[in-house]
Image 1 (cartoon, rainbow, N blue to C red):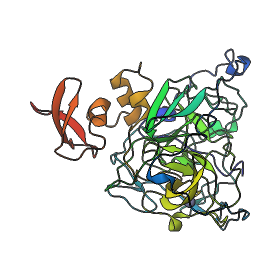
Image 2: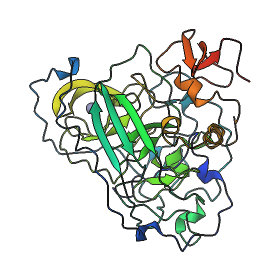
Image 3: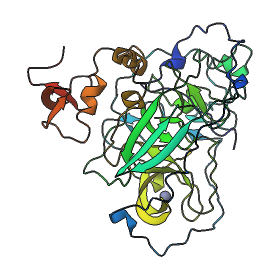
Image 4: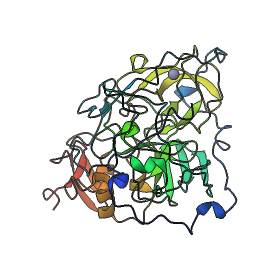
Length: 405
Ligand SMILES: [Zn+2]
């Protein structure tokens, strides 16, 4: 299993690895030497919180002890290059960005690409290293919100980044970025509900229980990030701003359940992301899931068995969230965390130079989350109307006086 998943990169936020010329490898500043104590771990704080309203109807359900089985051929997984869509579609990412023209990744095509439109996850290269980090992450329920705070550093080890020229992964991916601490603060709905319409996803789509940000399935070229970029043993790597992230389920998030998989993380609409397996223990494929990569079923949710919508990770593209079935309360970690980052800088990271300057500012996008076209909105003390600007499929708050400069 270790090698099945090695992710790849990018999406808007990434671009990262795509910038070729690798700087000289850093030898002196190995973060593993800082053995700082871990802060409070996730998962501990939300267990006693009963879910409040409608979600609380627990069923007479006992968790299945069916062993996990799989019919998925990991040696022939379909490559998801270009599988983005402007509408929700099974097996695709309903992406807010549909104009991918970031810079190309350097390095040779992976020898794990079969040449028949499939790839072999068992053959994929892995970034070497075993670096420990001062992980900090907590989840708590506050009112009707589930609050996440953390530094973006994983509770597991990572590979050595930037990728060293002496690493065999370097032949395929010269990720020049270093992992750095982030300032993550998110509040998602604690008991999300299905929205009237799915919402497109941006570059990052959720947060996992390891404290690591989850990105969508694409690199900056709109290619299957799992196939074209190389990650470490825990399926993560950093983008340009140092944000360590996954593009699929990390092998280092243990699925401790039999039958239906355990919770692995949360999408930005508040719904849970579960592992590969369904209630009967069989590995889930796209055929079992809807256009957003989820389904309704009985899950364990805040210590109770409830029937509700949830996403699944799969080994098939698009791996995790294909669109938001609920209403995302944030659209990007960058929009709420990393608040020191200048806005333009984020745009650059997100777009890989492709659409820089054409996308509305994040705060204008955030102002229209959950609203519909034509709704009135405000950013700071400016008021306006939610509209879809050119080159964007995301609603953004456009000032009453006219489109933004
Ligand atoms: Zn399920």
